[in-house]
Length: 126
Image (cartoon, rainbow, N blue to C red; front, top):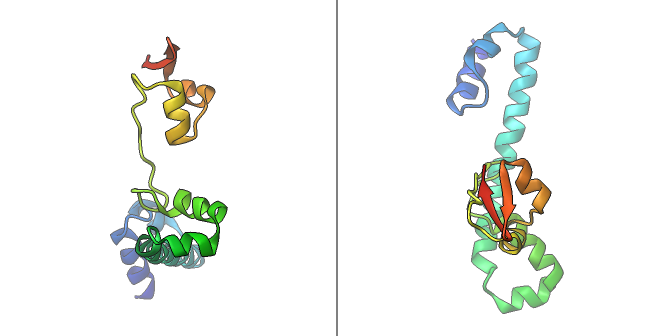
């Protein structure tokens, strides 16, 4: 009974696929469930911290208190639009090299590995 409840909860959140979970023994299902609970806890913690950061991010006193360098780290971690672990696909076609580096912290080699070439300091999809 407990095994079915764990599998149902993991499937409900899209953590694993049903066929894979049904092939595991009870101990392995328990291990996967513990991983699922850990991920769920970390996701919830990330969302709470992100909400707190949204509340104080525009406060000059907060920036002075924490320091500019640490504030920039927080902006990099929690100032994003996407959720924790979510991969956002970006279309670099027509963007300049410096613009991509400034906005996405990616170099030319990284972008070229994603299927782009450089023409006149602008990326072009191959």
